[in-house]
Length: 138
Image (cartoon, rainbow, N blue to C red; front, side, top):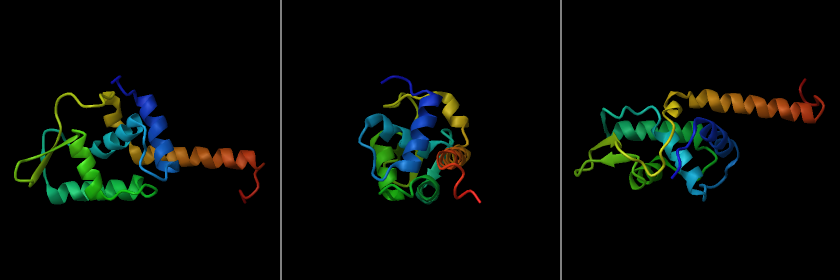
């Protein structure tokens, strides 16, 4: 697969978080969400199941509210797609090293995903106000 650029990621991530109502069918969109779920995990650190669950629950709360997914299913998707690795006892997790099924621009790691969504919401609201001629902006 081609490298997912930061620009492509931003566009698809905000569209999916703000508009999607189902888990995406397009493989690239699927990977955008999975990549966003591992951003912030240190690839040099092992995590307990409780720590991973907490991280993924936070992701579901902030970015997955419109999607039919819970942290357990998200964890399975991440493991199946190779973004997370679980030890043989199933007790510790690591962010995957090496080639991923969807390589991505390292700049994505530096993005503030919450701010990205906030800015996209602000832009949508501004367009909505502009389109309605300012109605409802009081």
